[in-house]
Amino acid sequence: MQKPFEVDPAEYPFEDRWLPYRGGTIHYVDEGRGQTVLLLHGNPTWSYLYRNVIKALRGECRLIALDYPGMGMSRAPSGYGYTPQEHSEALGELIASLGLTDIVLVVQDWGGPIGLNYAVRNRDNVRGIVLMNTWAWPAKLTAMKLFSIVMGGWPLGYWLQTRRNFFARKILPSGIHQANKVTKTLAKAYTDPYPTPASRIPTWVFPRSIRKARKWLAGIEAGLPAIADLPARIVWGARDSAGFPLDEMRRWQSYLPNSEAEILEDASHYVQEDRPDRVAASIRSVIERIQ
Image 1: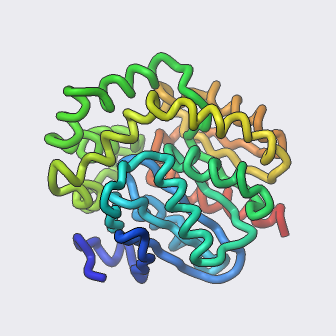
Image 2: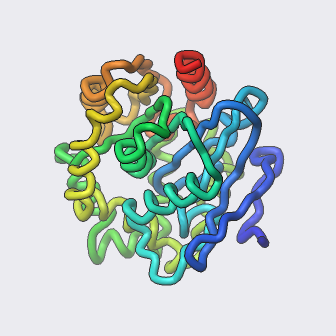
């Protein structure tokens, strides 16, 4: 497969792999050997988000990071709607096609609902969880609802995302607390997947789905007791207070009583960019607990 855009090989030095999917393709990286760790991104990110985590751990375990169809280097099949429900189906297809078993799930942002939808339905195939600023229930916070209306609404939200690439250009950098890490190379890696208005539709569907996927999210929440016994590590960016305040972290602690939590005062929403070292350490911690 030909890459749709180039990435700095010093930043992202991984072999590109491709899985045919319903007439499209799922791009993923598969690095290292040992315990299977599945890394799930959100909006508007892709497997690049986990590059520093993968580099830190690929000598210790097997790390797999995919790009959802229509995001990163993946190509969506015809008629694909870019909803989190469809992305979760694609995730299940990748897991089945690669024969992945005894998985440690690492989730953040929309990766939480996408991954935990799989986990609550396939509890026997999940061994542990590492969780960062995410949720898996219908939005109750006013801030999240307003965010959905503005960023995922019509016509303003649609215009912002498809015409201005607003999520990739503006929201993502603002979600990284350590401003020195927002380099031109990083900015390019997150805007290059969305060169045209049509290619940017996935970044509009995600915030829209905060409201539109309420029933699906409620179903995931209802299933969370199935994974309550799993060893888990919560790594929470404390600077992400608007949509993901500490109360949301505490809610996770109630659902995952077998979890350990770490609050990062020097991290915001994209914890993997601010503190990849703590994400890697958390993955190590969970692997140690399940061995």
